[in-house]
Image (cartoon, rainbow, N blue to C red; front, side, top):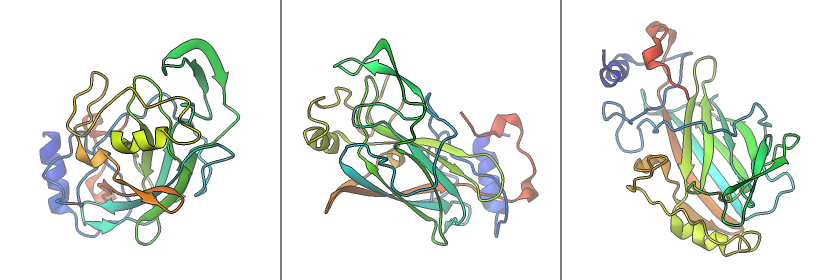
Length: 251
C-alpha cells in the first residue's frame, strides 16, 4: 500500500482517538487536511539535537539577541481539533551561530566552519520544551536565531505525542526581509546579513524549502518580533496497530 493511500485511510477511519502516534508528512499529502488543517512537512533533525530540553518558556539563558515570541498550535489533522498534552521541543542557534549542548565548529567571519572547536555541552540556551494546553497551544520566548553557512536562517522542532508513539520532526524557516532587519540590529550587525538567500518556492542544493508550511510569518512586537504557527500532526489510536518500517516517521 502506498504511503498516500495509507494516510488517506487513516483520515477516513478516524473519529474520536485516544492514545496513539504522531506523523508528519514527508510530502504533505492532499488526502489529509485543508487550509490550516494539514500535516506539517517533515524535515531533518540535523546534527545538533540533544536530550537536554528544559521545561520552560524563556529560552534566553543569558544570551543576547532580538526577542522573538513563538506561539504554536498543535492540531490533530485527523479531526482538525487542537491536540492537548503534546510535548513540543525547539532548538536553534545563538546570535553568533552556535548551538548549546554540543561541540560546535568555531565559525569563520563568512560563517563557514573552521577546524577549531567550541565546547558548549554544559549549556542549554535556546533549547526548551512545553506541553500543549487544552487549546493545543505552546509558547516560547527566545532570541531570533543567528546564521551559519550554508544554511538559511531556521529553527528545529519536534512534536511528541501525549502518551506514546513516534515524534514529528521538522524545521521552520525565516524570510530574507525579516532576517535582514534583525541582522542589521544590535547583537547581530557585526556579522552582517545571512549570505544564503532562500524564499518559499526556491530550490536548494542542500534542502528543499518549497513547502509553504515551513516558513514562519513574522511580525513586529512591542519588544521584538513574534510569530504564530500551526503544527499539523496525525494522531491516531492503537486500533491501527504498529506501522511497518516503511511508514515509520523519523530522521
